[in-house]
Image (cartoon, rainbow, N blue to C red; front, top):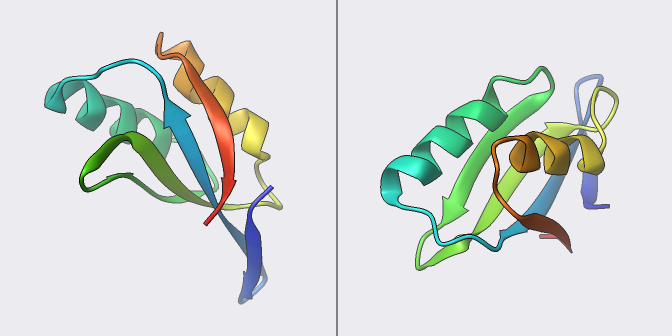
Amino acid sequence: MGSVHQIGTAHQVEVVIHVDDALSEEQRSNLINHVKQHEGVEKASFTPGRKHLMLVDYDCDRLHANDLLGYIQKEHATAELVGPI
């Protein structure tokens, strides 16, 4: 799931994850930092003005979209994959 483009030898994918929970600024920051700690995640951020949508760029040779979803759910946030950017 996501749009794939090759960067060097890595296959970069961008996905949107809908976070159902109403998170505070601190909770969103903590969640972003948690996701970024995983090998293969290049970028993670919430969309300005749409604080329930997280954008994640990752290397699909190292991770799958469901891995990202699991990382978020492990932090006690209800979320689902929306799709590619």
